[in-house]
Length: 246
Ligand code: SF4
Ligand code: SF4
Ligand code: SF4
Image (cartoon, protein in one colour):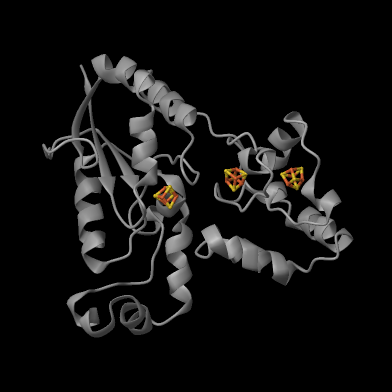
């Protein structure tokens, strides 16, 4: 029997949904086993019966709490996709300010037409079954997770930090170039794409389980950087998640 799948969007740029659509041929290969019943980025039909719900985006409005609870009731599996849904992501930057100030800054005199609440990851609102991190998600990871679910397996999630893949990619560590990087405590799976591309890791895939914070502190000390400096960097994607640094 085909698994019915829905893809829902909340607060985010929809980039992770576009990544699903970018899967193109691999997505078509899954069609015999899937029935996509709701996917705003891709179709006009709306279905209310589904087994698997992918959630793109963070929860950022009161009405979204109700919507998420409805999705949870209907779906057998709820899977947040992307940093916004898994971590709160960049949406959580607004949590540093009062919600009134956020609304006034964004909408000016029309602020009273809108509502907003402190942003939060999906797991802070409803129980989740798995998650696919990244900003945006990695296409081949999405396809692999769907294949594993269809095969009745619990999908694999690496707990290796980005550094492991960075070394395998043959990159020179940016700490040796006088820069800082969140790779040592960030979950891998992206093949260290940002470092390979000439940048640094900003932690978009969230913390690994039990991050070796002490080791990261030593690395930072050696590089002449304080924990406070690096915590600011974590804010970009992990402002809702950095309790581990306390
Ligand atoms: S995780 Fe990144 S790409 Fe995905 S919706 Fe959020 S901002 Fe967009
Ligand atoms: S700290 Fe950053 S640049 Fe250095 S190895 Fe780890 S991921 Fe690569
Ligand atoms: S290198 Fe870091 S910021 Fe870049 S995609 Fe990987 S986890 Fe995200």
